[in-house]
Length: 481
Ligand code: ADP
Ligand code: MG
Image 1 (cartoon, rainbow, N blue to C red):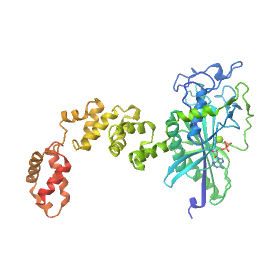
Image 2: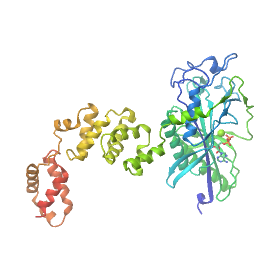
Image 3: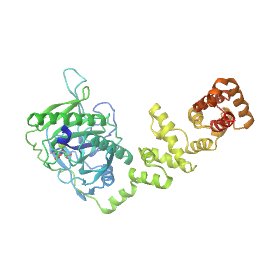
Image 4: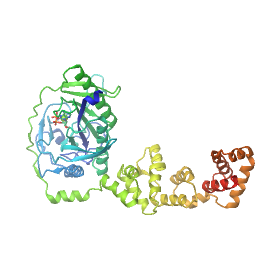
């Protein structure tokens, strides 16, 4: 029996997403990333005596959006609590968070893995403020503190211990990242720390139901690292169990230079944070109307949109799901579909040459310069046999991206309209056959694969303008005579 047949990994993830509001959770300080250190820090962020925090309504709306998208129950009566602890990057000495009543409860996030669909169960989504940043590598002898981030609104999305492999966790974080971007509530940028993940991992004997002792790997800043850290921990814990050692409940950190983790502290007992309701912030009640309003503003969610692309445009599941990778790609598809009914061709263009161009340029589709009507005109050129797909994608598309003009006019100006005039084609075909008598007799003896060679020759003679489909048919006719 392999070790993975004997043991079952159990994983629960806590994902912090920085909400992309302009200002902080409890004051007007900017949340802009990358400003000079300590320039976005008012006395309210510092919690100075006499200052009064005030809840950012937009942040509450964003949290509710995520909750609705994840099928959570929305808590109507909310309050913020102080979580008291000392840390240099926590200027107030407490973090404002939600304690016993998270704004969103339960719910699930659907993922698709190699073993099929799964609804990962959520425990809660709560709101809290971010801390500042301690910077250890700027100065040899000192740690520097940047408090710009202190007070930035976060939601923390907490799953049940419901995942059982690094692959599931990888899909889950990928889906969360897509969802927050889709909803426009977080930029999902893991490198800048807008999305951070803590992974809780334990291992138990398969068939048992009690949870094993967990370790928590903190602050994973890429989806790859989430997967690598979990793989490493599963392996490490199984080795311990096999040796009969005890697994210590620990907080660990990931070292991306060698894909391992190391202990930062043992968690012997729960910390006492002395939570109490923040006396400076009034509790807030959410009305049905307020929640219904937010529900109305929600964009069509990825799963719904994917279903609609399949039913309305006849796309297959793969194409539809790829187009739903982000909202702007799906919207672009629909914009082009208003101009042409060649739906499959639109998908092929977006997922083929356009995606390649965007990858090369490291751009998002929102920055793609070609208008939907021009793309549809280009597709029609191919569909009506005026230019081949390869010429359209390798020559016309780059030219159109330089300067958008009428695609048909451009193809004419560039001499790229395919020749399907029989006389011209026949002349090139005869020349090609005459030039290669040996190959002709080999073909006639049965080496039918040589047809490609003749077609290639004709293409060359025509400078790419001969329609390969017609050329092939004509060549076969002649050679089989
Ligand atoms: P803590 O108080 O240590 O933060 P929580 O009970 O709040 O722990 O859970 C935090 C995360 O850890 C949740 O995502 C939860 O699903 C997960 N978790 C809890 N216990 C285990 C376990 N034994 N194995 C794996 N994950 C766990
Ligand atoms: Mg935790």
